[in-house]
Each structure stands twice: as C-alpha cells, then as structure tokens.
Length: 334
Ligand code: KG4
Ligand code: ZN
Image 1: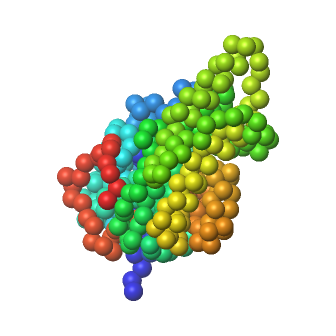
Image 2: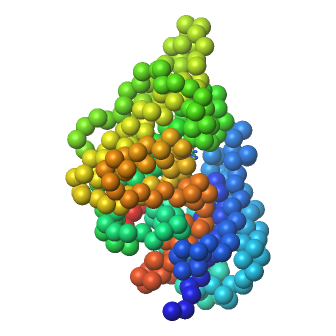
Image 3: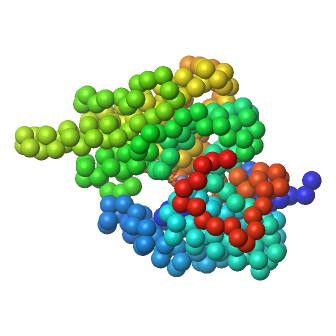
C-alpha cells in the first residue's frame, strides 16, 4: 500500500504547531512554537495575544516543519486541521492556513476535533485497540469516552464544571506558581506529603466529575491560613490537591472499566503528563489486569502530530471538509 503523509496543523490555544506524520504512526517532523513565556506574565492565556502570535508564527512553523522533514507540499496527501474546540481567534489562524494550502495545492482538507487529536496521540506509539476507554484530562476537558472503533466516540461522563487542567492552573496560581501550573504542581508534589485534608470531588455513582468544589476548598484553605498568619506548606498542599483530583479521575475510570468490561485504556490530554496521574493509572490498570497506553510527554500537550495522526484515520474513512469549514469554539466529539 502507498504510504500516506498527513500534514497536521494545531492552533487551538497557545501553541502554534505543524507536523508531518506517515501512516498515522510515524512522526516525520514536528515544530511547536509555544507562547507560554508570553502568557505567563498574565497568569493565563490571553486570547487576543494568542491570536496575534499565531498570525506571526504560523508561516515560520510550517516552513520549518517542511525543512525538518525535507519534504514539499507535493509530497503531502492531505491536511488535517483542528477546527475546534478552542479559542476562536486562535483556531481561525490555523484554519485559514490549512484552507489556503488545501486550495493552492489541491489537497484534501480533514477537519479534526481537538480532543480526537489528544486521543489519537496514543496511536503515535501503538495502534489503538478497540473497544477502549479514553480518559481525557486536558486544560479544557475532563471526560470518559468509550470508543468502539475509529471515530466512534461514546461519552460516558464528563466534568459538570471546571476541567481538571483548569483546576491545576487555578490552584497553582493561588500557590504563587507560574502558568501553566500543572507541571509545577506535579513537580512540587514530589517534595511533599498529603497532610492537608481536601474533599475528593463527586463521589457518586455517575461517570461525571466536578472540580470546582476542590478548587474552592484549596483557595479557601490558602486564604484562611494567610489570615491566620500561617505559612502554607506549598509542597504538601500540591500533593494533597493532586491526590484528591487523581482519586476522582481513577475512581470513575475504575467504575467505567469494570461496568463496560473494558480491556484497553488510554489517557489523553495535557494532564496526562502528570507523573502522579501516570503512576495512578498504571497502578489501576495493573490491578484490574487491563492494557494501558499513555502518550510520551511530548505528545500529551498540544501538538500537530496528534492532529496528523487523527487525520490519517479520518482520511482513510473519507472524512473531508470543503473551504466553507469554520472554526467552532465549542463542539461535541463525534
Ligand atoms: O491538552 P492541553 O495541552 O491543552 C488543552 O487542550 O486544554 O492541556 C493543558 C493543561 C494545562 O492545564 C496544564 O497545566 C496541564 O495540561 N499540564 C499538566 C502537566 N503538563 C501540562 N498537568 C499536570 N502535570 C503536568 N506535567
Ligand atoms: Zn489540548
């Protein structure tokens, strides 16, 4: 069979990224231009600033990607693009670039949902095996998704309020840690003990999550200690917070694995880079005797390779968009 090369473009938040992936599994070249250093001065992503930087970076990122791959647009079979969900201005920049390339070089355009991209980051390591449970833990999403085949998504449950990554970032902020807070909390956790009592979110019979109560509990605890003139033991609070949030993730994942008789579990999204979560998911799946796949760190946070990987399977399924494709800041996975 002829090799298929997909160009993946991702600009949904604060990373401008392009990647070329062969046959959905082999990363040929990836370029990621991160805006973290710009947004950290504001404590979070400022949408207008993010869009402006995508405009500035997109052409360079694409050129560098082709240079790295030693390839030309003519070598590409199709262009996969994140159309949503995400920041509307940011999405539009990548989308316009993808549409322009599709039009000029007459290449098929493949619309990819951002969370499908995170899920398919796992196929850059090993082909997905169905049925599987995807534990999606990102800055904007926290969901349990059952997949019976490629692009057959069935949402079992999700967060009723904040996403887990959002909660990590807010907690980091009250602890005085820089954006993005997730990696800082995870690092700090290694030095602490879980001595603070925090509520484990939404202990019920559903597959849903809720993180706003945990977030408020941490914020209130910090404010109360400050008012009393007590010092916060940051590392202890970081590990206490991680313990509670990870317990919420694993307890609902456990329920889904057992109820649905799942044999393959994958973790997807930026928070999958948390060493504590990776370890907890390894322990859980070992205990239940099921297969686990977690992407390497570089594929956990936003990147073009995951979009290209998803794009390959979408391409095989004949999924195409025309030049009327529009960005969607919110969209359900299907
Ligand atoms: O998937 P992602 O890159 O963007 C969205 O699609 O939202 O996820 C970003 C989130 C941020 O909240 C960030 O703090 C978190 O992933 N994150 C981590 C780690 N690396 C990134 N959280 C915990 N531990 C990490 N090592
Ligand atoms: Zn993401």
